[in-house]
Length: 434
Image (cartoon, rainbow, N blue to C red; front, top):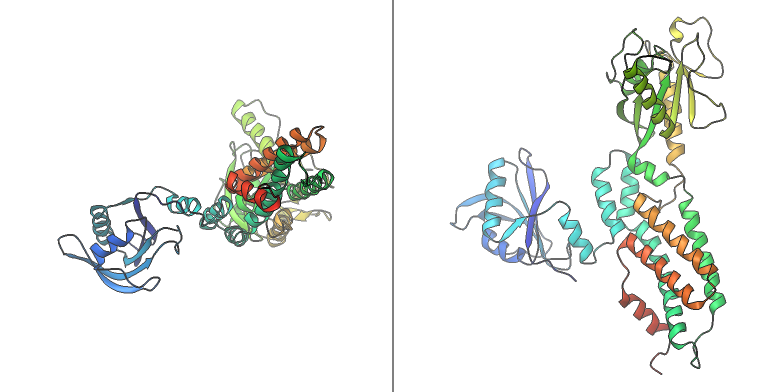
């Protein structure tokens, strides 16, 4: 277990102005600091009502104190929590007393970093903690909680263990292949490599569902000028996001509105009206509108009852939803499209339902351990490439190197690959001491 030299503290909940503030401490000096300012350490993991005093003996506050001796704490170090009243003066006075007692303010993410360094979690779980704190929607909360509990890390650790065994096999093959009794199961190892590679490829073939849940979706509203795009985004967001005007070309830049649809975070984009123009500023807005639409997860192509959609629409494209606006003044309605009136609200609930369905479709079915970050994806592609090279290698030494590279790439995801694990596997499988 790695212990940092410094004892750190930070606000874990509440803060100045809240009814309560929780200060968290971690590090080798946590116990002695409690002795100094609280008159002793409570029983481990039991809240105790204590008076907190500075070094002159003046009472700073009276609150609950909890003591978590190592390794049974979040960071794996000696840790403590101080549950204080939330006044700014209380927080400042106690923080000053902690500094005088030998602690320092924590850096961003330092508690979780120490938890990782002390083996309390791997990197994927640490990322799950960050995602849980930042979660805006129910789907983000559920996904982050699964990752924090180790669903993704468990999958990757299983693959890492298999790579460690393969690496150990080839290391032993190179060193002891000619000795009597050394296993010669290269064909079985090749089958294991092919099977593992296929599993990772299937994991990568997920349509970025996990990343979409974590980062949120982007839906672009596009169409000709004055078809009601800005009115539509205001109606969907239930607030004034965009300026509404009868004057064509009012929207020049891309405007954004963040909302929740179907339990998924979605950013709606209000874009410049698509038309031919000599105005350089409006032309740039139209260029940006087309570029953002091309990158969006879903395009909402809006038109009015008198004109067809300006955006190139393929009715078979699941990425495009065609909406006819201004039906409050229309004589005829399109039967094969969603008819709405952003002015009166007619059809807006049905459109919202369609958008919710699209959001769920784009983020659903990711399994219990979906990929959540581009970092994971890049590392897994490196693993797949190395395993492919191993299958194609003509020499055992080259295959061993490719497996080693795959193991290193996998270890970059969890942060848990070391020579000790390889040696343990070698010693367990082969009688090297003979």
